[in-house]
Image (cartoon, rainbow, N blue to C red; front, top):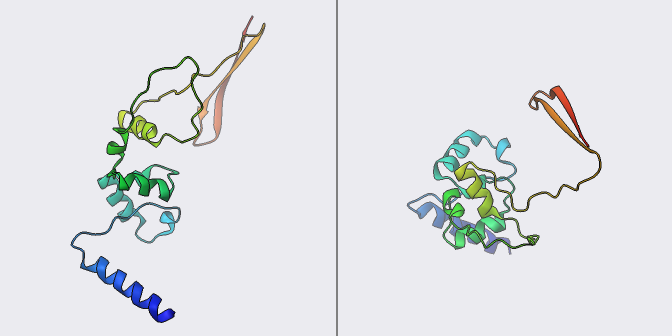
Length: 145
């Protein structure tokens, strides 16, 4: 059994080495601990790899790769805006195409606008500060009757 596995691994390694171009590689959870993290990240950034989208599982990456989509720009072009409905449906699938479009166009897209219920008294709170430092320098309370 071990002889079969080692020969299989040897043959796979030989195939990878014999390729003229380097095999595709992706960003994963343990990348920051990797010795060549900066070099790897730079290469992924140059190729605009879809694995740079935070939280994208490997299965989804492979699904898009089978369709010939390897970069964030290619992924953003897969988004096809649909006709607006009076009652938007809750999507059970995450729209990676929408995230890619938002990154490439540097815009924020709203799928469903929030519903704000009218009450006799409405109170809104606004915090302003520096989130990187965990410091809030202004808190504003609005009271509308």
